[in-house]
Length: 112
Length: 114
Image (cartoon, rainbow over all chains, first blue to last red):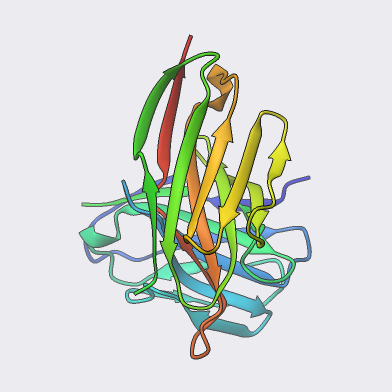
């Protein structure tokens, strides 16, 4: 059972480049989330989705975009990478609400 | 502003020791408090606490919530090297003018040495 799968696991970007972090879940969860985790800080919510076609901003959405065309997939897009976006990104999903969410293994992104 | 504070931020103990991790919070419209264990990668869910004074227990781990003092503790007895991880405390809030959100603390990094 795969759970929540994130790709890639690691990536180095140059300033101004763009990329998409992929997230797929096979648990038929309606709720999906993108968090970022910086050293010594808690996870911060970037965007979330309560179902296919519905997305909304979290605490730190600037510089990111998302889409939710299917229940399974919730990609996170960085359009113009900046050093401040260097972080570990976690995708998560849950049946209902943000508690007891299942997390992916994370993507470590470095912007240089 | 909603916040979750954890202490200590890091801790080194010997196998067999008992540890207590602390979590305090200031959150509008509290719903629940969550504990996660993060071993290098994905956080995994440990406990959800909604009521004061009721201990949740799983093996050597236990946790309790005090909603009056806005505080929770996570106890680990007879620690093992496999308990080495970052323990995240988070609080679920449901503000009237915002989304149902989870605010994470910075985590306590626990290292258990043989």
